[in-house]
Length: 463
Image (cartoon, rainbow, N blue to C red):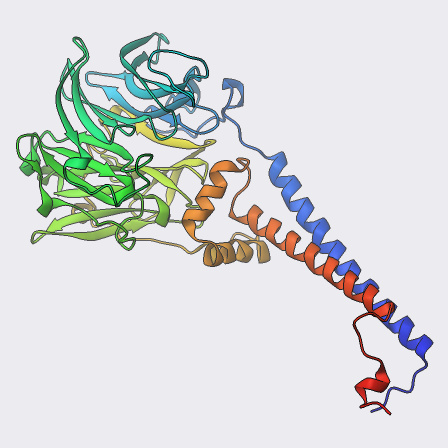
C-alpha cells in the first residue's frame, strides 16, 4: 500500500519513533547504572579488622588467608567472632595448624619490597617468609625467610612441615621444591621441575613457567615418604620419590587437557586408610572442585561440585564430618559443603586464598574420600540460577558462554572486588546500548541531511 501521508506527517512519525527508542536507551542505561551503584555500595572489604564480617557459628576455629589487594590472615572463633587478624604482610598463602596446638598456626607469606635490599633488582623483589603465630596471644615468630629477585609469580604459595626442624617449600620463582632445615637454613633436598618437564610447555619461560603452587609430604600409604607437587601451568599433579624422581605412572592430568584440570590449586592426598588413594583438588579455571580416585592404575573422577556463584576456587579440604571446606577466590567467600551438596556454613572474604578448619587436622588429614562417603556430584550452571534476579541472572550466564572462564578470572583479578559476572554483563549491556544509540543518532543525522541515502525517486528506478 502506498504511503499517502504528507512529508510533514512522516517526519512527525519518524521523530516519535526516534524518541521512543531514545527513552528505551535511557531506561536501559539508568537501570544498568542502578545495578552497578547497588553492587558498588555493597563492597566487601577485609583491609582492616573493623571491616571483616563475622562468620556463622560452627564447631571449630577457622582460619582464612588472602593474597589479593589486601593481604590478610583472619582466625574466627567457633561463635563467629574474629579471634585473630593480621595484615602486616603483602600476601598470605598456605596456613596449617601446628601439631598438638591447633590455636597456633604456621603460614607462608610474601612482602613486596619497593626499595633496594639484599639481592633485589628492578622491578622490586620479594621477601618470602614462613611464620608461626599464636592466635590467642598474637605473638608471631619468623621461622625461615628468603629474598627473591622478583615479586610477581615469585612467592612461596605452600610450605608443608615434615618434622620439628624440616619443612617442604613450593618455590614458584625457581620452579623448584626443596626441603630446608629451618634451624641451620641448609637445603637438604631439592627437585627442579626442569629435570622432568620441557621449558617449551607451561607458562612463559623465563617467567611464570611451572607455577608450583602446592606441595605435600605424604606420611602414610603407598606413597609414604613421597612428595606430591602441583604444577599449575602444566595442568598436572605429580608424585616425586626423593630417591628415584618423578613417578610418571601416578601423574594426574596432562598439559592443556582442560577436561581433567585447568590450572589447579591446592590438591590434597587422601590415603588408603581413609578410602584412597584419592586427590581432592580445586580445578580453578574450570570453576569447580573435584576428586579423583586411583582405580586399576588410573585416575578416575569420582566427585565434583560447583554452584552458580563459583568462580575461581583455590582450596578444598575434606573434613572429618564428610563436609568439604571450599575457598572460592573470585566468589569472595569460604563455604562448607555438606555431602548432599548444600552450603551449611559460609563467610564472605575479599579475595581468599586458603581456609583451614583448625581442630580437624592439616588440610584433608581427617577426611575420607568421596567414594568412601558415597558423595554425589553437583554442578549448577549460572544461567539456571533461580534466586529472583531473572534477566540479570540470565545475563550472568551469557557471560559464561561468551567469555572464557580464564579471561573472566583475569579481568576479575584486576577489577574492583564488587565486580562479578553479573556486573560485567551489565557493563556489557550498557556499552552495547550506548554504541547502538550513538550509531543510530549518527545515521539519523546523515539521513536528515540527505547524506549517504538515495532519494525516493531513485529508489523507484529514476525518471
